Image (cartoon, rainbow, N blue to C red; front, side):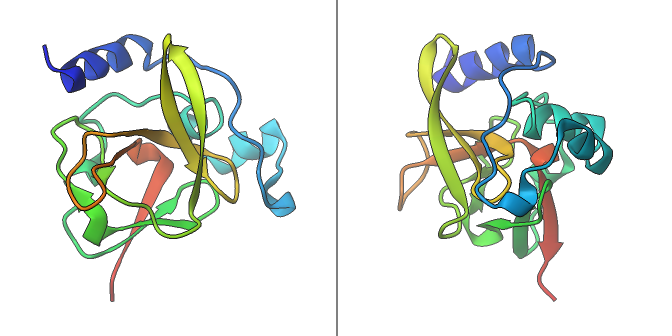
Length: 156
């Protein structure tokens, strides 16, 4: 089994479970209460963005999004990724080789025992996904994002 296949299988096992709370919002405007986040987000988006959950692979329509545009945080609408950096990683989650400048922050998590680099929205702290070192050139990174944590705005 490939590393991606193993990670996808593990994600299926833990996908419905909640984890630690999301990262603290850098912008005081986005330091909302739990009740405010629940009112603002769908249950699936709340579970991913605020409880660091993982959606099931191949469940997001954004995985197949091919139009030119910008992917935004579903929590606060901060632009996170350009469609120019999106690629099909074969993992079942929207994947990008590079975020927009100053869009995300990272931290190490140990939820699957081995350390992984988790990334979240710089503004609201909403969990987006994990970054791995098996992506394409020019960065060699794979930002593996939960589709429910994103919205997409096509170019006009």
